[in-house]
Length: 333
Image (cartoon, rainbow, N blue to C red; front, side):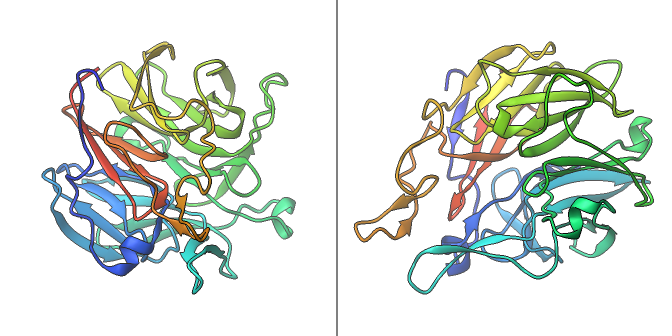
């Protein structure tokens, strides 16, 4: 880990059966006061952790899963946008895991930090959703406190592989497909969206995960560039690291740090090279073939899914696996 200190036991996760048996699949965000916001692995509850890992509070939320968690601030009040993919892997009576799909589609909602619903965005009014699944995975907001338009970008990563744009009042503005320039190509699981403000002109980053690349757009929806060939394998979530760097959580067992020009700086906690081929991945299988928690190793990632970075450069990561694992990396680039 170089100059980073690895700590995968800092967070006091709930110790109930629902947490241990739940298949964690959530994002992370940091509040203004430094609380780390995550989600219960088994129940629809927003969790808040202090810097020392104490679980300070929990709040029921009107979602099935907080796949993506984005903190925003309006008039000095903090809210959380949640991308709810409306599906959850739950343990079955025989010990296996099956996906629970409610009758309602996925949703993007804004909630107060106590879980109270403030705003819900409608399913995009496109013909593809008359029969096709809508399953949002991430939200990014061009916040007015940064001089932005207030537009809300929603990635439908598990549904139709589109990125939707809404106005602040929830009215629908349009969609990106990845084909806007005629060269980069159609999105395949746009898993995360992120507004990058490291440069004079803010840009929208789209984690085009199944294509192992990132597509970059202006906040007007115009294509700018694509990068990642040869050094990204599964970009899944973004977080700014200091003034100039970006850290990308890659599901296939590592974090990737980039410089201000989107060039590779280093990998952190790199595990398997390429898609892991362990039976039952991201979990494991016991002698009967039933899904069980993976044999995790300190210093090596299994399946990074959500990432957040605090003002001191400490990196927090949650992984996609049964029982959750929250890793804290103290140090610097």
